[in-house]
Length: 121
Image 1 (tube, helix red, strand yellow):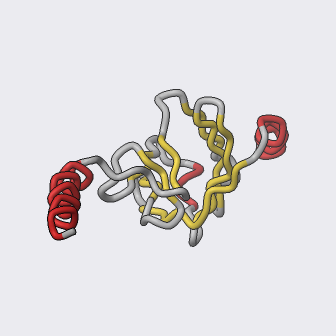
Image 2 (cartoon, rainbow, N blue to C red; image 1 turned 180 degrees about the vertical axis):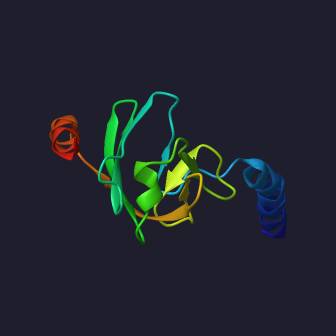
């Protein structure tokens, strides 16, 4: 019996470092950003529309982000999670003059995205 316990402990000890070395998976409230993106930012003080490959979202800001509508550059950043956009991990939209905290990502259909985009123009 002692031999069985010792063998199990050794097996667990061998597995633990391999599991620790695996990269962390993206949290459930995150999406992986694609190079194929479209942002609709007209009327963007509280939210913007994001098409990320074949996914569609309303990206809601925690506070007003007036510069999102006029800034020549928009970049999503998530500390410690490059290439991810998260609602609960401190993601921000960086503009030339503001850093706008992301409050939530609302998944929407392609049809809803197209309708909302038309209404914002």
